[in-house]
Length: 48
Image 1 (tube, rainbow, N blue to C red):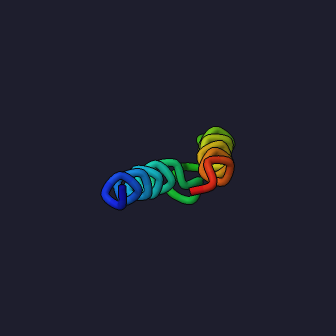
Image 2: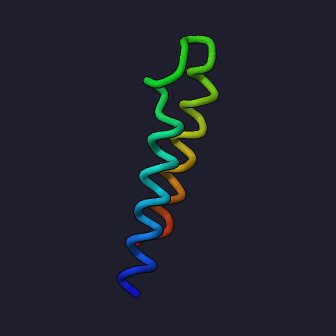
């Protein structure tokens, strides 16, 4: 099971990095912030 948990953590980190608001131009930041918050909330709710 540890391998599955590692895969989930790696996928989470990848999605967070891809949607981090600091990586987007100013006009795209609101959408990126929403996506970033959603990914973070889902990760917290999953309670790994």
